[in-house]
Amino acid sequence: MATEFRLPEVGEGIEVGTVVGILVSVGDKISVDQPVLELETDKAVIEVPSSVGGVIQSIDVDENDEVSIGQVILRVGDASHEVVGETTEPDAETPSAPTEKEVIEPSTPLPPTPTSEAPDVPVPVPSAERTLVPAAPSVRRLARELGVDIHEVVGSGILGRISIQDVVAYAEGGVPSPVGSRAIPTTLLAPPLPDFEKYGDVERRPMSGIRKATVRAMTTAWATVPMVTHFDKADITEFEALRKRYQPKAEQLSVKLTPTAMIVNVVAAALRKFPDFNSSIDVEKNEIVAKRYVNVGVAVDTDHGLLVPVIKHADRRSVIDLARELGELAERARARKLSPEDMQGGNFSVSNLGGIGGSGFTPIVNPPDVAILGVARASYEPVYNRGTAEFEARLMMPLALSYDHRLIDGASAARFLRWICNAIEDPFLLMLEG
Image 1 (tube, one colour):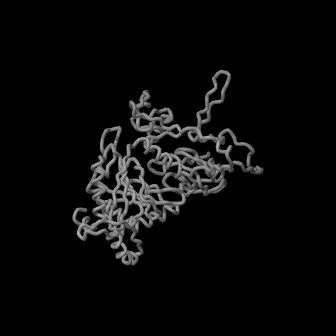
Image 2 (tube, helix red, strand yellow):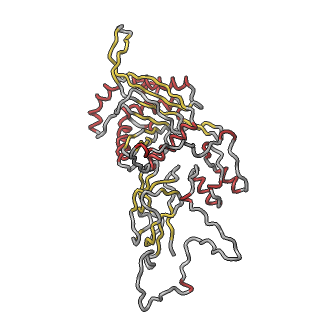
């Protein structure tokens, strides 16, 4: 009897991925927990272990296929069973056909064969060929347990997201209606593209899993979050001198002391002092979720796209600890070795483009966060010194705070960013107020 291995839930919020590597072949004998697949998700590339053991009879996916949770990946049988696609010559002691008691039952029920007495039964469309719906893994699991086809449920959340209540209501015989004007189509219609080929040769290439996730996330963020960006500048002349002064000490500990690590240290303290920036909005329950922990995501530029690993409990870490973990996370991100857990649980993000260039930019808030800090390249500017009544060359760093205006007011954003600037300009302030 063949046993199916279906794609399990590989991380919170991950519903689909792209096969980038198949680690086994038909005929291989595999064991439980043996990696069989490399899957690229919107978080990272991960190895997927098998939950079944035996001899592989068939592999039901190919590289570059997009697969969803619950889809059949491969089928295995006992070592004594023949491998699908191979033929063997029967010997004298082996019957050419199984007896009635030896007939192998299919692993899944087959649709009834149409007869003259029974009407044709439509074969359901496989889930992999159907449009993906926005729902958390826990909601999908509940739908399976209740025998509900989640594709038939109408989501009442933002962008049609399906909640547990929607599934329960459908299972009880009702179809929940979208909530007033808050219901938005799950797919935002884009205008048709022109015929580019009429102007010259073009090349098309599929999006990576990370790029597809970016498209979805940024479209959702732009459509659902009313964002405002507040700008300020921090004088980092002493800040940079302090970093260079202690860089040799950090190197003795095999750590590179970066401006980003020092900024994350300041941001973590600011999130403690201004808890609204460490919160999320629960639209369905009309509640504000204030988190009592401080997790900060840091954007990392990689050859495969932008990734945002998360530093957990950043407010409890020393600058050296932050610098060490940032270096490790960035290295794993560029090597595509981040785990789903590395990318989850963030409350606030920092995006530092200072090493690349630019005098400023407006970062996009990543829901359910309510704010993000953008850091641009510092440059020397003439700044008036009231004490000497002269202009001095000071190293000024542009900062941009984008925030969700549903929760954060403009005055609050200005105070938050100014506090960050003051803490950068006078690090002793963290000891006094941090």
